Length: 184
Image (cartoon, rainbow, N blue to C red; front, side, top):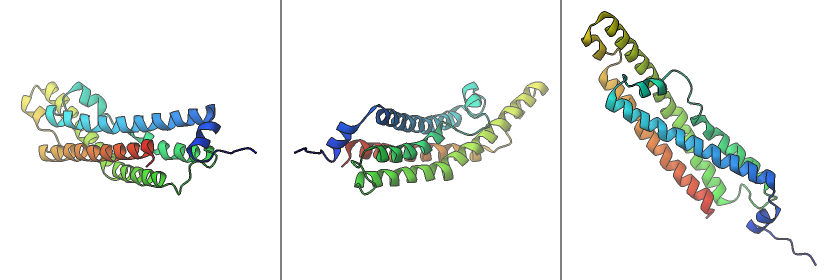
């Protein structure tokens, strides 16, 4: 008589190199997305403190899409692949999987609807501020450098929006990670 293990023991016994590679990619994509959200909040704080003239701020806020943050969208795709590769050990009816997916959806929605649009607006403000500074240097008019086209309250509000949203998204992602690791 052969005893066939079920549940987590089955996943441990039937897990192969392919499963481990997908699991590693799943974890790495989560870490990259989480890190990108942390960096977004950090640079918004730097922009709030130093203004758009800092070289690091100018480099970070160059126009373009925050692709590292979009690594978050790879996480559930790889998670679904892991469920399929688990030989039935994990299913969508497991509470920790549905909770993790729900938390991920909240974080992704906040990123797409609030965080990344606010970051794009900051990119425009920083670019306009850099152009104003270049014009001021060329004209040797010191006051023009401080008069960025985007008003200071708008820039401050944009920075605060990114900082608060990044912190909230990171908090949700931490809870999702705990749920995924603990599998309650």
